[in-house]
Amino acid sequence: MEKKINKRDNFNKKDINKNIFTSIGIPAHYSSKIVDDIILILISNLKLNKNIKIKNFGSFMLRKKNKRIGRNPKNNEIYKISERTVTTFKVSDALKLRINENASK
Image 1 (cartoon, rainbow, N blue to C red):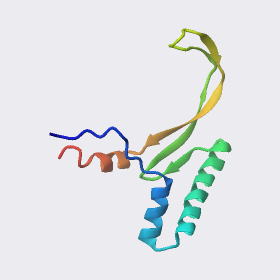
Image 2 (image 1 turned 45 degrees about the vertical axis):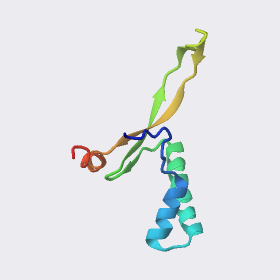
Image 3 (image 1 turned 135 degrees about the vertical axis):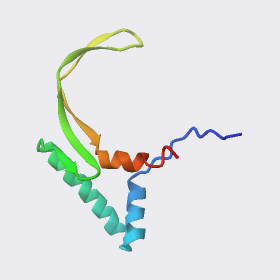
Image 4 (image 1 turned 180 degrees about the horizontal axis):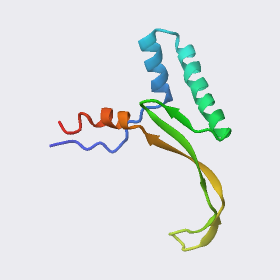
């Protein structure tokens, strides 16, 4: 009988730090600083309304959403949703192929 797993096993920032310092051999605090700096660079460029394209990985893009009327499904209360800018991510075709190359086996 196959056991079902209810909890997601997420790969988080701490795991990225660990992989960097074990594969490259630099101290853990340096690998943590590298990851933090990369994230800050991404955020600062998105704040400047720049799209970010990482070859063979994907693109982070900004998208404007207009204001609209929303409804709470629990109590049917209607409210206004303000105009806002959201960040979207589109996976590159190369990454899609790499992820799915073992899916048919």
